[in-house]
Image (cartoon, rainbow, N blue to C red; front, top):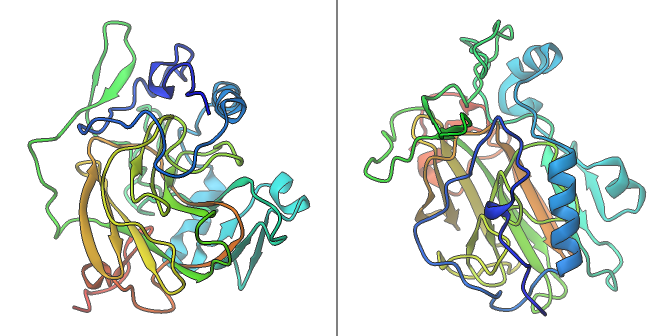
Length: 308
């Protein structure tokens, strides 16, 4: 398949309030190791991002509902996805069946109803009046380009204080009838995000993909990162430190390492798949995480005292 004409990171029509997303330091592969999206999908994703800028702050309704912590989080697919049954959600938004028809091989993405934020000490990202009881994760310091667009400060020479706020969730593979053909992806993305694109393929998103173990925040073939995954029983987690913008992933309870830095956005837990599979999302409220260091935390930050 021919490669996209240019990377998402080089697009000239970006939402002005976000600036340029900092790339990972490793070289990017021109092509995917096993599977690739089509050029038409790439172009459609770019159009969607340009027409639907990321949300910059939460509504007051989100602020009130978010007080319940991890128990309020659930996966809610876009109406277009639900109507076509490309993602069927059950068990209070914690189990997702992608592409239920085994002959369906399309890319589908779903997100949580709330982003990763701490429901206290409100600070609005634009410096305006605070949204009551919301602390948005993009309150970190920023620099500006010559054009005046804010850009997250890169912190490659820093490491997060792991005693500080951690935001985390996990995904367990329940079924994967076509493991050689199906790609499962876990990551973070702003909202709205193209529902036909996996996390990491478009601006303002990062992802860890099962078919090649690569990390993505580009429209090409991703960057080398960790082991392949996707077998039934595999549990993969995604963690985020808002104080540094560090994003990391885990597999079966083991930390693979930091994948990205300087990523300070209003992130939503995001899961996607190309092909039929069934996954269970754990936000840490009903059962302990496989990754021991994240126990006591959740997508909204600290839930209770650490259990390890």
